[in-house]
Length: 235
Image (cartoon, rainbow, N blue to C red; front, side, top):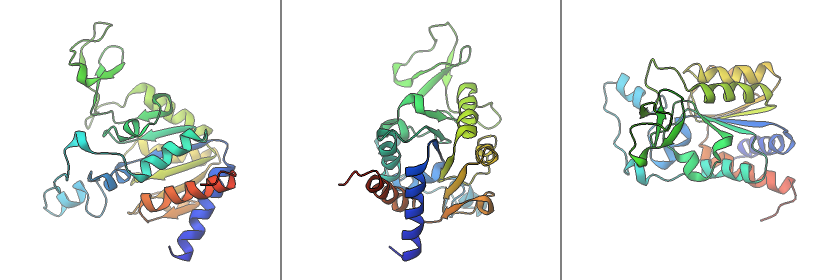
């Protein structure tokens, strides 16, 4: 590990340790290390489309994809009582699969394994093969298509927690899709430190207090290990 990366990881660990209200925001980039292509990365779905290339095929079926080191580092933060909230643009279910608790997660673009009631907005496990909610409303895919409104509960919680955060960590998002990408602005306006871990450039790079272009799996697990040392937890 180069000296500069080591210094930045140490700073992130210190900030996580000191933070009273850390909020994480994840995009497709956190799942690329699990074999799921992102959208606007150097080899992402939209990047390849703009070059006239087809998307790279998945290396494994969707239902067999597993969380990676980046996902598990956030779970570790949760289990230590340090994660206040997690906002995700992903629909791949990997955060819930990794062990993130429902009440700490907002999935702004839905979840491919869940159905949503068009009447009351409640979500249920899609494997139950139901067509109607208990309220009588029709059940449809919870995944948000272009032009559709984001789920009200998830959007409201995301804004609320972003405004409360004192440390806002972006992992794997190009931060160009709104209103999801408005969350870092809310955090900054509230005085939070902004950390961005993303290979490609983002519109918030000049506002970031700490910036990583390295892989998330090379940053978050090491930061967690150093944070635990600061907490007096030795492995």
